[in-house]
Image (cartoon, rainbow, N blue to C red):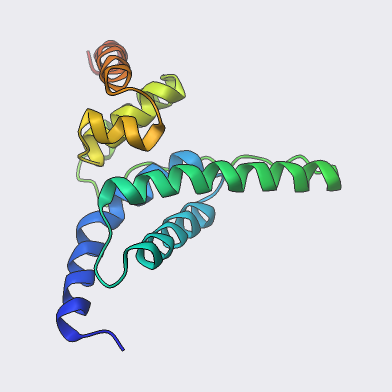
Length: 166
């Protein structure tokens, strides 16, 4: 049984970080349910490694990243065996409760046009609130590479959103 203080700590941690983790997982998964599964499995795996309290956020992002790769490989092998072509579902990256839905759609479309490497770094930096060192560990790249991808991605994002919003 989990102690009441630990339960409260976990509730706070989940409330604070679940939206960030789900946003990241949505970019890695083929469906909303797969993204939710990735987040849940990553949290449980990190908890088992850490013990009682909530895990560090960078560790959970890294675990989601690795589990998504493993999951994609498994699914691709299964699809090849069954000769089924999976259709990727288009997922919203933002919470549907965002006040300015049009602006959210503009940002979503612009993010979708960025290369995956830049999109991942921007997501982890802005919504995941990670440092470039933590992003580097999560994506297994140097921190300077993460910073460069962020800079280039943000520059391109500004261009793309300016075109639509002006």
